[in-house]
Length: 323
Image 1 (cartoon, rainbow, N blue to C red):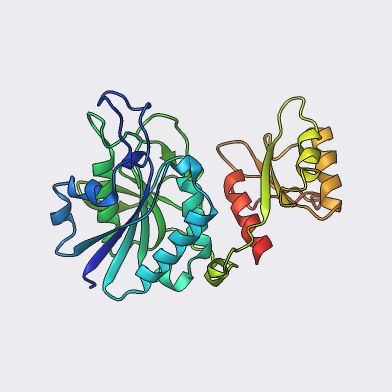
Image 2: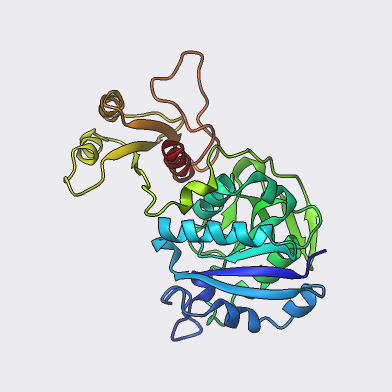
């Protein structure tokens, strides 16, 4: 057994503050430091089961503004702490808006050996720290319980008493405190009075990307954009992304969130095939919240996302282009 649990703070609603305790939407995210956030959770000391809590402020952002620079730093700090023999687990406090993207990114870039040896648990809040009844403190306690459970492995997301895998988790509600789900698969576990009841185990897919690439100075993150299919969709947006201002990096990839089973308006599909012939990598996902693109017998002109949501397919494509 190690001696420490490391908590990396990145900001978000869990660290937010508003002028009135009754205001759960008009707050400013990332106002409370991670150490102060943890100090305010009285039962945390006993939850650590004798371990030391080490807090580190990696970033202090509203997660809607999450970007490549924070991702790179966060991945490096996670790797360093997971390699430390005195650290049992790493917990990350994060905003809810892009939590699913950060979780998937970390799962893709961190060495599998580290993630199979120790858990990396992400948690969040839907109400700011200043709320009359904030949900952040309980989520942190639940995250610690999961982090110290002997069965926990890989990148996990804990919110409202449920544990989700990085690959499947997605934010499904705009306001409810139980904002996340894992689609058809359901949660991996439930946290009940500091005890973890496992319902399944995550399937870890070895990443095809080396973390060392992120340590390169001024790493060139390829430009990959998202477009959506809808009634009356045209190819104008696709063409405008390709033939953009000279000051914008060239488009390297496109993920299209198709309707239904990844279906596309005829005009939008024509534009996507056009840019694909020009060397832009195109991946087809679905805008539906449940299910995935199911391939037919004939080879598809536009490859599908292998079950990934559009935002996660974008990350996978971006990393594939970097690799």
